[in-house]
Image (tube, rainbow, N blue to C red; front, side):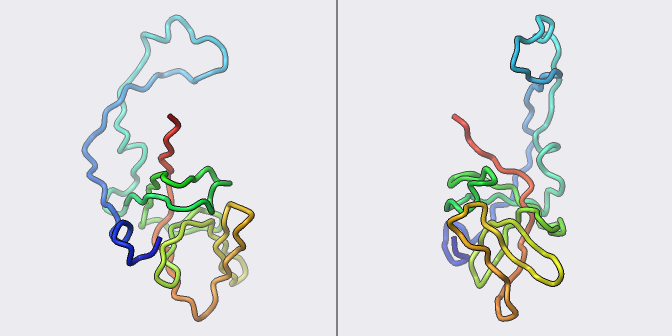
Length: 146
């Protein structure tokens, strides 16, 4: 996706109205649930669990297949937090030469690279002449299963 592409050029800020869902208080196992499990639950707000900093969190839709090894697929929605400092090996949304890209961040010994999680894409070494910014850190991937 490019920064000038109208469908991706403007980050989508979150409208963090409470979204209350029932949360079961037991863990999911591969066996049978306890008969008492139907009576134990609490309500949670997904915003409290997914958003660390409302003003700095944005949604991005994924285009492409470079991160499938990390479980990020085309059409997924990423939560990106701009207030977090990118650390070595985290997944980031970067702006590289006027194009947004989602990659694993590599920073060791003064070397910075963006690494795909798909072996058909080579690592991208960040050079002095590159216009490069880590736009934000990916905190969650909303991936539809059904």
